[in-house]
Each structure stands twice: as structure tokens, then as C-alpha cells.
Amino acid sequence: MITITDKAKGRIDELVKEGNYDSAYFLRVAVESGGCSGLSYKLDFDNQEQKGDQFFEDKGIRIALDIKSFLYLAGTELDYTDGIGGKGFNFHNPNASRTCACGESFSV
Image (tube, rainbow, N blue to C red; front, side):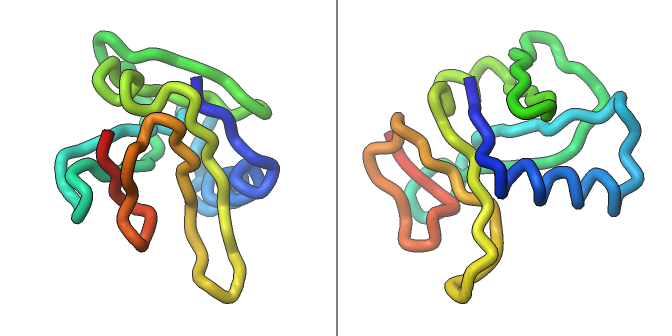
């Protein structure tokens, strides 16, 4: 399961409104090969369920993970930062043994 902080929920709600997404859309969270630590995070809005998708809901946000990503992201918290150090989503992943300085990639 992935949880979402209040700040991340607020930003996701803004993006849904800006993108004019209807209720058929959900947040797809995935892990891809790449990045300086070997694996990178991917966030997108989607309205097409894929075979093997795992669905969760937190704070009214529906989240989809493919089964491979679920294995890497179970227990992760999605946060959003808009401070002086930069804006963006941050993943607090208890499964990551190492992350890069920018926080966009990790290894297990």
C-alpha cells in the first residue's frame, strides 16, 4: 500500500483540476529501470486498468501499481515539497537501501 500526505493530496487535487481529469482517472505509480541508483519513480494519471494492477485508495486518491512496482513500493509514503530547496513529489520508501541525492532514483 502507498499512503499520501496531506500536501501530496493537495497537489494531486490541483493537477487533476488543471488537467480536467474526470473520475475515471487514477494516479499510476510505477518503478522503472534507470536513474543514477538503478531504479526510478514514475507518476502519471491513467484511466486504463492493466492486467495485474493493484489498487489502493488513500485520502480519496485512487492509486494503481503494477505488480512489479508493488514489490518495490509497498509501505511507501508519497509527499510533496514546495520549499526553497525545490518543488516536487518525494517518495519515502522503506524498501530503498540507497537513494541518489536528488531523491528520484533508488536501489534495493
